[in-house]
Length: 258
Ligand code: DGL
Image (cartoon, rainbow, N blue to C red; front, side, top):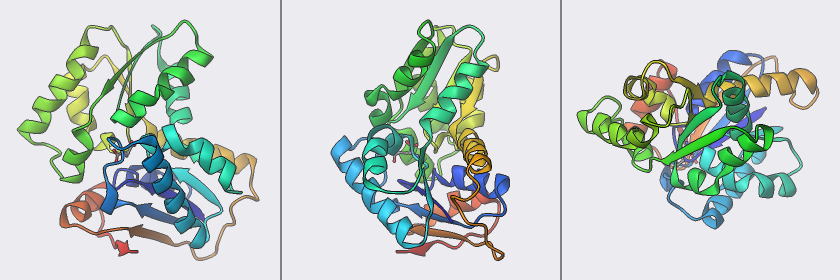
């Protein structure tokens, strides 16, 4: 079974992509809705939450963990890899690799939570592979609460996006990494404001493709079941979270509070 966690419903964009690309595998998802958002919290707190989320998923039978959260990926990956004996896959590397492959002018923008931007992880990952690339990062702390609240097409959301994207507009970027798994839900609004010439990189799809490739190369790590199950757990359940979840999957969702 594949275990996937996020601070809330954003990581469901990864889970949805995994369901579609890896239909033979069961998955368990854990959304820490009670403690969302992670982005404004300290690395120590995010690491502690990530350990608990991983333990929960291992308890459910996970044989591989996807950290479907850029904030947790940027500060907790090393600790989780040291502490747990299963493969831990994070969302930064797949998105950074894709941005490197797609950018033609070597100027990449990254938007993410405060935790992700402060960690400098995208800058480090991209420039380690491509020292001549320029990486411009913008923290967008209000976007996660807006998505969790279901404000996906409100005037206020558009205004806030315009303000967050403004500094990136004169940097001549040709690629923008959506460095938060909540942001694919705002993809249309972001594209309209950053301009159609800028290619958006969705860390959710890239991570699912990365996991698919990993499992092709390591076919014994996660067992395939005859009866595939997709279970969605959360530390709390709210009406708005349910609405966003159903929008991501375009089907009625059951969220098991645990
Ligand atoms: N989806 C998480 C991410 O990718 C959001 C983190 C948060 O809760 O702030 O960063």
